[in-house]
Image (tube, rainbow, N blue to C red; front, side, top):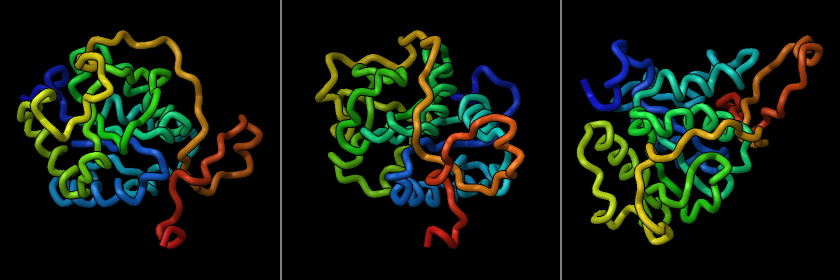
Length: 219
């Protein structure tokens, strides 16, 4: 049994989950397609692959929990926009519950340049990430690094030029951080689905206009 699954007897539903802001969808979609070649779309948590399932009430509760409980490896694509997106914040609220536990090894960071201050999400300056823009990595290279991580090959932080540590005072694994008690709800990447008018009578719903559209609408 792998290190990513050492605290769970039953296999998780997804081999890999992708968390990203909508501004980076074009690139992340290429990565998702490459990962789907290896694992199949059903085992990649990328919203478009599961749009029928996600066209539901209370998606803001249902979806984020899949990252924490049903994904072997959780890949976050960081950038300055990430902190300002509601759906990234909801996903990260569940993901960061793994910090400070053995399951912190299930978290992997990429960034598009300097992601800025993400401390409100529990991502601190000591956390290592692979800089996609700085290294001019293609989607194929990113997907291969994810597959390598899932193969449990050692990730040499200090000796790997493709990992940006220029802004770090020191490298420390994500597992050192204690989970924070609260995470503010942020506005951002949302799911566009038909929601019955009755929902408005139940509770206010966040804007979901840019999370996911029907495939024909995105062409």
